[in-house]
Each structure stands twice: as C-alpha cells, then as structure tokens.
Length: 353
Image 1 (cartoon, helix red, strand yellow):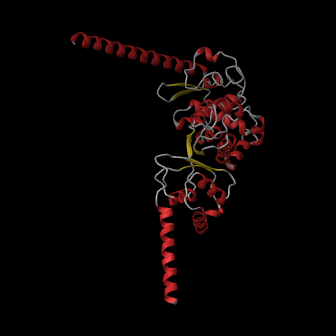
Image 2 (cartoon, helix red, strand yellow; image 1 turned 90 degrees about the horizontal axis):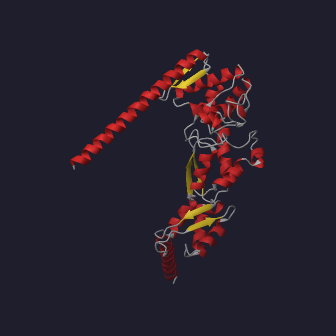
Image 3 (cartoon, rainbow, N blue to C red; image 1 turned 135 degrees about the vertical axis):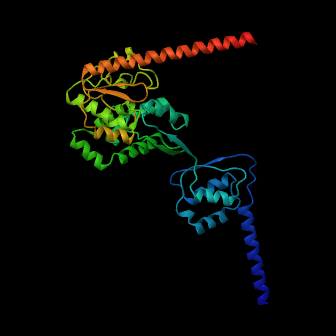
C-alpha cells in the first residue's frame, strides 16, 4: 500500500515537472507579432505578472509567480517597455524581466554639439520634440534644480553615449546628462576654477568656444591661452563661433556679415565671455580652459589644414591672415581647374560615344 502511494506521488511529481516544463519551454502562440509590454514604475512582480497574463504572454500565473519567487525576481523588477517576440517562451519572458532588458535608445552627444543638434537627436528617438526640448532647456525650474546660473542648459550636457529607456520623461533624460557633466567636472577641476577666479559657467563657456575652434588636441591649451590673454588685457575675444550662436547652425559657414551682427553672444561686440556656453564641451576643452598654455599669443588664424598660426602682435597676425587668404585662393583655383578638366573629359567621352 505504501509503495503504491509513493509511486503515485512520484508520478504526480513527474507530471507536474512535465507540466511546468511545457508551460515554460514551449513558445508562446503569438504568431509573428512583437508586442511591447510596459511595466510601470513601482509595479510589484505580481502586478507585472497580471500585465503579462492579460496580454496572454504567460500560460499559468501561479507557476510564473512561484518561479519568480524561487529566482528572487519578485524582490525587484525594472520598469520600462519590454519587447516580446512571438518565438519566445514564458521562460524567455522570465529571463527578459530578470535581466531588466527594457527597450533603450542610444543617443550619442559629441563634443561641440549645441542644443540644436541635441534636440534633433532626442526628437529623432521620440524622447521629446524639438520645440518642447528648447522650452525645457531654458526652464527656470530646471535650471534652479541643477544650480545652473546660465540662460539655458547649453554646455551643461556632457558629450557621451547615453542609453535612454523608452518612455523616459524628458526631464529625467536631461537630469542624467547634466549629472554626467557634474561628475566629470571633478572637485579638483572645481578647485582649479576657484584658483583662477572662474565660475563653473565661465569655465564651460570658455571651454565651449575652445571646442568649436580647436581641431587638434595639442592646440586646445594654446587657443585657451589666447582667450585668457585677451580677457586679462580686457580685449574683445572676437571668437567667430559666438557670432552665429542662436542665429544658425554651427555646421553652416560663418560669413563676414555674421561677424557684424549684434547679438548678446557675439564677442566681436560684447566684452568678456558670452552669457553662457555655445555648445557642449568635452573634458579636454574643459581642462584646456582651466589650464591654458604659458604662451603670449593674442591672435590666431587657420592654416586651412586643421592647425592654426598663432601671433603675438597685430602685424604678425595680419601677415598670417594674408597667407591664409593666399592659400584659400590657390586652393579655389585648383578646385576650379580640376572641375574644368573633369568637364572637358566628360565632354570628350560624350563625343566619342
């Protein structure tokens, strides 16, 4: 009699194991659809299971709850959107939840990006539309919450690659990016800023100008020195990138008429630094702003090859500018000659055919 009971219990156990295995291993009958399931912030594991059951993504809620407790998943579940394909089994769904594999968008902010470019990137991933982003960027409550003494969060978003969960509040996304900048702006750098009499805003503003001017890293401290020297001598900075800030994209060519336009940021008209940064500076430009090279330069002009010619006197600078213009003219003539030769060659080929 006892043996029969044991045999029955063993059979029941085997059947239950088979049942659980089938329930968890066999793929869900959802066809080729790829539904997105949203688990709200603060939801318990039981509430998450109810959501999955309602969407018919699990077969037996009680088994799912049991396995969740055995694996510790019931203690913490990550909120967000989960993508669940038709080839998944309930076990796959369980592992998805356990690993917190929510849908995330990768946003890369590069050195020199302005709010205009950042807004385009966030809008492209449906995080926030460009108009709302620009309004939020200058929101007084947001600025106050991050202790930002500037017209907007321009320059306070650190260039990096961010993984933003689908459905994230725009404010939370900006919090993440601003906090990243504050982490990189270490206590050591803050002490250095205080030593040279610069506020955080002034450091980031100068760093953003350096970011837009410098192409090769070795020149960042030298360009920084030019602006420090000008500030010390109470000269206008005359930084070309400031002339178009808020007017047009930095991707566009800066013209002579741009330099003559009066704006609060145009350093050809204002004295000292602009009211705030003009782009997001990287750590190399921030360090350069804090540690300028020990050089006497007051001027610089492009060599048209990524480097610059630095000068101490106005006379030296004028010669460098003339040389730059000569190089540009030669380059222009060479391009025109190449284009003419191509046109002639194309015309010859057409005649031959």
